[in-house]
Image 1: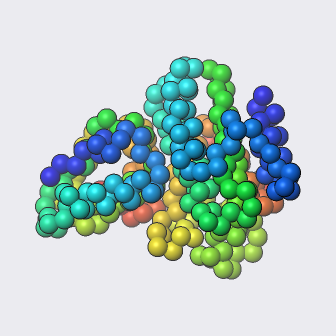
Image 2: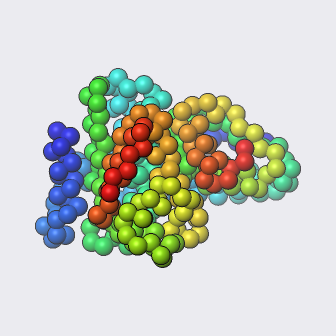
Length: 93
Length: 176
């Protein structure tokens, strides 16, 4: 399954909006998927991303699924956010 | 202009609550007002010549700092809620100011680390260790994100809480 992050907006900053995004994902897309389902998280079109938002979505997806890959994650804010999560939130992807 | 705004923010933070006043241009009482103001920042920076990558990175850092004020003081503001928020950029130098009249880093982090002795220890913990006072989140990495990006992009951060101040630049200076 591919999750297009830009569908939640192109500027993703606060923890409450991240939490809302994950609740929506959980309810409509992730609910019945097995833990070994391949998940692609696509950052195409995302202009700004913070650790607070991503911690509520990316970290939680990575905790729940074993086979997660990141696509189009080259932008400066996405890279900086992933670096912080790997350093301080034990993100393994 | 930068010093005027800095003084304005400082006065607002330090003045007795019944006397504290602030121009509406700089005052964001609620999170949505702060986010609406911050959402305009990247376009203003880019219009004045800043590269898109750095403009959105600065926007993200401001988002973390401003949202921290609201996250940690929600329903707990000692008197006046909200933040002072200003951003200026003249194509060469720029300054952003976020100030609040909240509980402060020490009071906030003491919920998770009761042994903290003073503001200096609280700031050191906030900028260097994985900790959050919000017990159900256990995250607290926004300030580390800001710190990493300050050092990586040769920016400067002055962060004060109580009687302690941290100044971070590419050389990672710390001043009490």
